[in-house]
Length: 232
Image 1 (cartoon, rainbow, N blue to C red):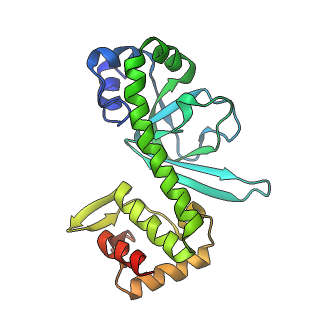
Image 2: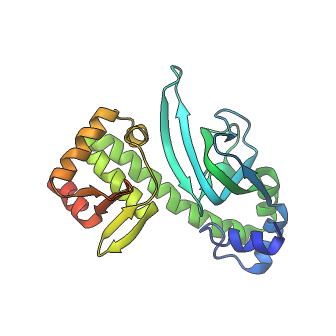
C-alpha cells in the first residue's frame, strides 16, 4: 500500500484525524499493511505486545479466556477501529486474543518506534492523549454498567452501544445493526448466559423495543431503549 493511501486511511481514525500532513508523515513511514485470513489470530493473549493495529477492512473479535477455557468477548471491531486501545502506552503482553472473523486488511504500527517518535514530538503526544481520554471514559461507562445494572439492563445498554457503534440509521432514532451477533456473542460480551440473552431479547420484542429484519439484523429504537432503562 502506498504511503498516501496509508495516510488517508490512518487519518480516518480519531487518534490521527487532527494531525497535519507534516505530523503524519513520520507515522506513515512507520506503518505497514498486512492481510489476514478468516479464522486466524492477529495475536494471542499474553504474547509480547509489539504492535497496534488499525482495521482497513474486515472484522476482528477481541476476547479473553479464563483458566477453564471459557471465552468472554470484549469487543467485535470493524473497519475504522483500532486495537488494542491501550497498546501504545502499555508494557508487557497483549491482554486478550484478537481473532479474524472475516478476511481482513490491517495497518500495523510498531509500538517501540511509535513511542520514540512521540518522545521527540510532544505536541503530537498531547493530541493523542486527548483522544485516548474519550476511550477511557467509554470503558469506565461499561464497567459501571457491569457493576450497577442487572442482566436485563446490561443487555439493553449493550444494544444501545452496538447500535451507536455499528448501526445504520434508517429512521429517527431507529437503527439497524448490520453486524451479525449471535446470542452467544452477546452473552459473552457481558459475561451472561445465552439463555438469559434469549429470554431478554424475547421480552424486548414483546414490548416492541426490538425486532429483526429478513436478514436477521437487529432493529432498535435507541430512544425507546434509553427510556426503558430509566423505567427499570
